[in-house]
Length: 296
Ligand code: MF3
Ligand code: CO
Ligand code: CO
Image (cartoon, rainbow, N blue to C red; front, side):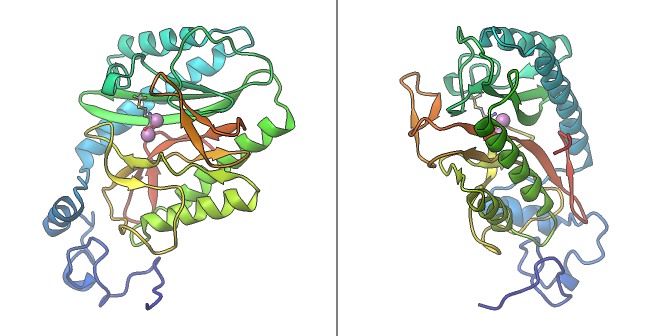
């Protein structure tokens, strides 16, 4: 197959919007890159709903509350804290600010936030577990405001981390940073996954395959799926107006997981530590904008 330089689309190349037209006959020069053909092609072919400026602003507003809530939780973290208290903090802060916590009752999920400690990869249910010095804790918050969804998470240290904790959190953070850097029109979903997988495995860590990033904004989970592994140039081409999460789950040991009897909590099979960072990312005309921006 011909290898194209994906970062620059030629006038006669197929339009990255997927319309089937040449770039010059389609999106070239259209300032927001969102032609009617473009929107329709993505919706019909891939079930991807591109976001216009109004929707983006709605998601941005929800994203601000997500970040504010993550900060509130971070300030409360200490050894001895019971994870149920994090649920209360998130629920009350969200509702008080006009939001709805999306996890609550989502496909039967019983709480308003996911809290995943140490070997828990994701979807941990807040409860009686007490945080201990040296734990790592992922807090994953999804908030709905005015019908718009934003989804982000961070992994925090409880007290001072040991070397394994420090390593897995740093690698997971760098994975999100490297994946995010690949987001621009003309690149593909596979470019994101490749960058993440290459770095994680190069560090001797592994990438969880069963859970992936996802379109977000109008609903909690939309098309497309965004795997954190893959090959350069494969998968859907990114176009302006796409909004999706990147949320690599990286294990210190093997990639395999098991789901506990509560049907939610996903843990590493080998009991090794797992860390994750997530942001909601908009594809812009020349790159990306995080709608849940924090430094990586
Ligand atoms: N916030 C998670 C994600 O990043 C999904 C949690 S689903 C829930 O996609 F039901 F567990 F909340
Ligand atoms: Co998500
Ligand atoms: Co999330």
